[in-house]
Length: 104
Figure 1 (tube, one colour):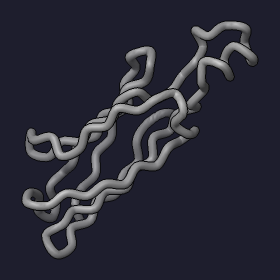
Figure 2: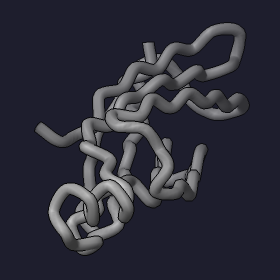
Figure 3: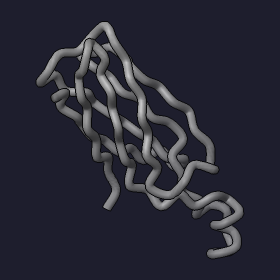
Figure 4: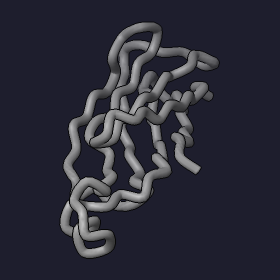
C-alpha cells in the first residue's frame, strides 16, 4: 500500500519530522532486467512539506533512492503543537502520495 507515514515533534522551538514513503523504488535498469521495459521504473522524484501554507522542506530525488525511503528534517521559527504538516511526494509517473503529521 502506497502512502506516507510521518511523525513530528516540537522541542526547544525546533520541529523534527521523520517520515516513511511506501514505494517500491525500481530503477530504470532494474525495471529493464525484470520486465524487459524501462517504462516500469517506479521511484520518488520529489517531496515537499508545508505548514500553514508555507513550504518548510522541498527535496528533489533520483532513481537511486531506496525502497520505502525514510526522510528526516527539521525547521524552526514556525509551528506549534497540534499544527499539521502536509506532505506530498511524487513519483516519476506523476503519481502523488500524501500524508500529514500533527506536531506533538
